[in-house]
Image 1 (spheres, rainbow, N blue to C red):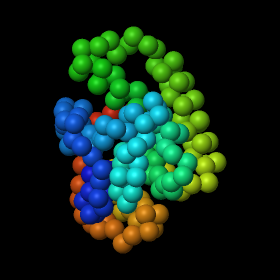
Image 2 (image 1 turned 120 degrees about the horizontal axis):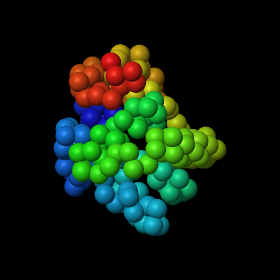
Image 3 (image 1 turned 45 degrees about the vertical axis):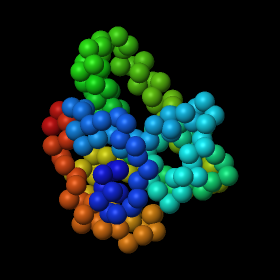
Length: 175
């Protein structure tokens, strides 16, 4: 999604500290100060006004209440999330089976439920959920609503061009 928004010409707030690797060959599109929100440091948020910033789900609840947010929430099937995490752990030389999938999935699902409940209740959050698999399979039906959500005439052709189905490697059912 970050690559798509970049292709559409929307300014991003990224620092490229975390370099592209085998897990994310096009980069992570992260901004390191985001990770400090859980420790109470959200001083970077004013710098982000008018830009897109990647914030992982567990950190969303630490966004300051005095700002307005449009959140594009990427949804992916739990088996794909688990497979992706296992592959990343393997590449790092860690045991991907140290914690059973059921335990991780339960924790992720609980976290997801809490984050979605927070976003839906927050008066300063405007939310759109995007299904990752649907976006990769056929971007065009997703891009119209996304453009309307962002309230901008996005270059949806440029956005669709950066979608690379070859990077969708941990599909449900292995297809």
